Length: 267
Image (cartoon, rainbow, N blue to C red; front, side, top):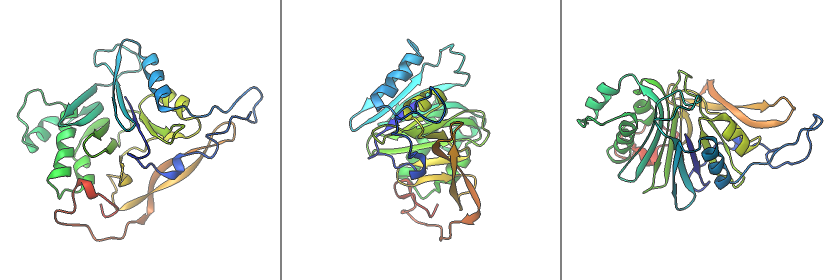
């Protein structure tokens, strides 16, 4: 899975961007060089090069791209189910599986036998966007299993990503040379493409292009950025965790305004 979004679509946490990311001077260790981040098109090419004849991608005007390894791939690093779906100009890349898929299909009134995890996530997104009010954290919390997904709404330019709390499916994110946010389940792709500006995506959390990074397990707590230093003593993109000592003090929003498009700190 690979998703790249221009900074006009996504606004990742400022701490994810390492102050050392643009440095190309030798580091403290002899023979080592700090590699600068790459442009999105270079990162996309790297992804396809890592999975020759087994990967495909979709690019969009304005600087958005989604890529995935084919479901029938025998690549050793692709141990989890991988799905790529589109409906009504909403695209979803999904890795992993849902234990409660059958019950969720009934909950959302989906009777099509071909409904899978990716199409279910698209329907959940459409429900949040069009037929609120539903707290986004509650909808994602209803998904039981080991999964990571990225949704891109080509109509609105909205980006949404989430990672389950089990930790079995890896997910990383970082900042490309032009400021685009990169989300991928392949650590080497993110590290090689984003230089020092990358970090693991926090488990049990969701990211929305407007609402930012939130925990869907503890929605009333803020996220805390933890400084990260690599083995060379260089500042990297921060790790993120739920701050158990602070809570967002606000009244929960009710009514039609509490929909997907206006998701903010009140959820």
